[in-house]
Image (cartoon, rainbow, N blue to C red; front, side, top):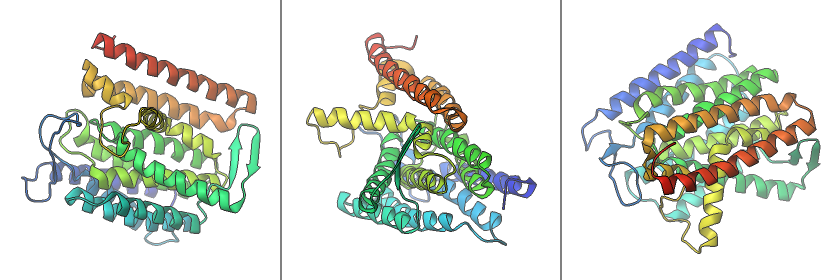
Length: 345
């Protein structure tokens, strides 16, 4: 299946199924299909909200897999990504239902990373603009596992504001879909676009004020897919791995910076907190809607840069990365200023 008229019809089905399922789940009374996320000292919402939205996203993705490739060969890499996503989704669902130990979650995440590695979705070279250094197999395997585990967890960490994680999926996977299409791999493009369609359907019920959340099921699975698709595209030489990092940099930079900051302060990094940039802006008085709309503008600009990057010469690519490094530094300063002012300017 490719991004022709039938492919677009499949994406429309994925969007509609996700949208209808999210709306239905959001309307379930407590104690049925709607798992409630109750407010606490470290959350940003004020009333209990269902956290079963990940089921809606998965329904849209399963529809794409069934309809898009029901009569044809599924790309091998996509099978491996699905096989890696399944245990992550299951353990995350159990975590939504109750409590799963950190050790078990970590073991499942490492296992999922090893599945991707076995399927050839690996970080096999250190690629930067104008540079391509092959990595020893052992080092590449270790980096692949660390990368996958970090992406799964950082996506979960960043899912704390209405419309945020779904928006990152919309723009991040949208960039990957365009990159895959331009590189001549319509199957990759369709698979990435399916995530966009499912996320867009979910966002109809998740945009501020959210009526439903992704839950660990949705956020962790999206993190696994972000890692898997970026490694798939890089391994297939559709784009360098750093381009995928750029596409998802709004999440990667915030989560990584916050982790490093908390480690430096001696905090327990595995405990819930409200130290991410987006959380600090909401608490500073910006609110969910203003913060997420400005985040969307950032995500759209980053996605455009990621799409343009492969067509640039190495010096221009370095200039692009430097420009974004400066922008992220300015964003950090802007967050601190907003905390002092208490409202957006």
